[in-house]
Image 1: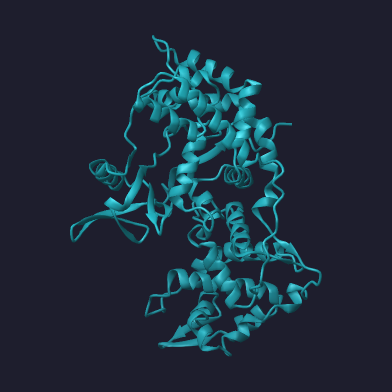
Image 2: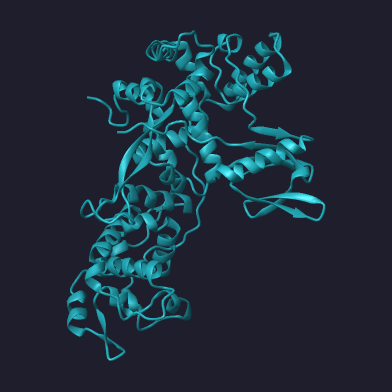
Length: 476
């Protein structure tokens, strides 16, 4: 039976061959080298497949995969063709968005990932509410080498088993309905009575908020667990949609029933996935929620899931404030990384290819370009160095190239592209990934504003523009 983590090879071929010619040849050239003319797209692609399916080449592709990339592969399999935003949210505590874009683009250049366009529901389109979004898929021609990484999902959710389990979650849950009458000042800011209005338990009459005692009594017949899940959902909706308002008379409970249900199901699934005899780090709890968000289905094709707008941190904060989960100390678990090649193996590959490069008679500019390809793990055999198709695109500037640094910064700002910045700080090189906001004069210095920092261009030892995906037009 076909593994559902991977599309068929014929589908992958159709995606690559449907790329615009300029994107297709840009993707191919770094691997295939100089292309013979007249260009035959099908023949070039067939030759590429023959190269990438060689056993020696697949071994090197496998050996190049580091721990971070292995985690991304496992997450892509778990989330089942995620969007970039879903991956970004999943790794939000570990990898910032700019660095993640750089890693994903590199893995696309290495043919580990490709992208397809899929329809999603948009909140701003009315009934004509389908827009396309780009989803990341794993390359099926590498199924045998990627499959062990896709199965190693436990590494994404580290936890520690504790000898004594805490009391059952159901027995230990507070009655949230009581918290609206017995609030601390901290809780009062969060536990707005208008959340109960969203549930239809309160209503306005002559400018007064009145309890609907009949509905409240009916609500109390639900299990405490279900009461709490619905109240927590209502609190999240209130904080998301109404917190900044001064009038709440127009809250109409029937409009929120679908949203209450959707969030309550997410909360229920999350709380039931937490084992009482385990401790979890914050990142694991957030990843559990981000995974469950991808499993949520809208009630109908025109319903926009509200949970897409609620980040995991907000949900966890609310569950902690309501006492539905408690903050515990966590000791980092050691992950089983036996399937991950050691970094020294990657370093050996890079070092060997650089030694080969040193023996080649190429210009300084060509040497720099080929060295960059080696460091990006794009070189899989020596013939790629000897038959390289080198096309110069200025993506980085270093040291005293002040004009180059300024040009790359301006281009990144104009294109809303992320940057990698290296600078010396306290005698050590510091690396920053982020989206630049502006170039600003500060006295005699021209400074780059990035990641809430203002950095003089003169202090930047390396500035590199991170490219966006070449996959633009493939439709699933």
